Length: 148
Image (cartoon, rainbow, N blue to C red):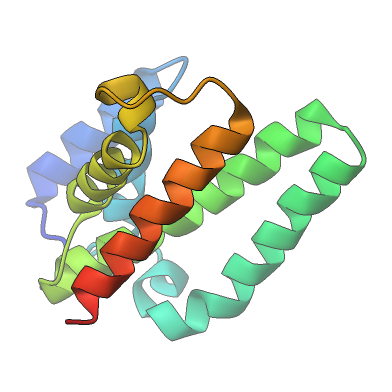
């Protein structure tokens, strides 16, 4: 189901965004939702996961280039472009009824907590090597559970 806003809601949300001087993650989610809703941007509305695939890859390469050139201004911009791709895909998934951005953030947070028992649990790992050993063991355990 496409994002739906009444004419008045849409107008309110756009006015709210235009009054702001700085934006946060929730604003990005709202902007993408507005772009993909009725009365939004025709190009954004037409996109699918597959049509955005090439752009996602290109944005990832641009992040790598910014890292390689040690350009923090470019890195900030390109990370924003990758974040946009993530929010865009999550918005499409929400429309499809499969998941939404909150599910993405929930899953990655749970994964980070689970894979860092030396921070969020009782495991002792005083070196990067020990952390990586634990990470790989946990990851291997997760894969075997998913495959059974």
